[in-house]
Length: 119
Image (cartoon, rainbow, N blue to C red; front, side):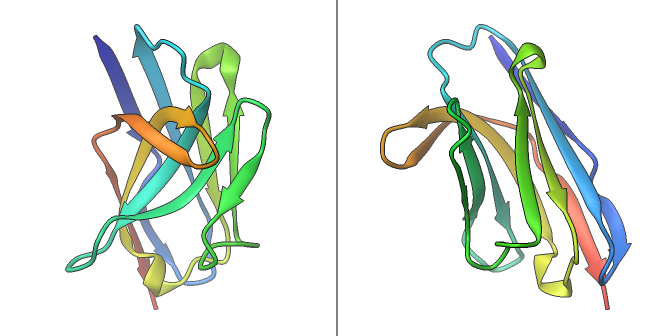
């Protein structure tokens, strides 16, 4: 059984920062990448960022230069540092653990954490 637990969401003013954390526990096998997605009301879930076991990072154009993904393998934990937040970053953010094969394929999901950016 795999458990994925997120934390760190909340309400912040535009221009502010938040740091999301996500830890996995249980039987995670052959995981070589971690990533974050988000879903705003009325929109499809979109990939925000991922990081591979070789620390290759990929970001969506909408967050590039503002968000930073990192990982701590010893703790099976990943982080998403979000700076210069904009109202359009408001969404439920989901972390995931999965596989990298030329792209990122999530296998295990967190429950989601709300991020709200006020203007």
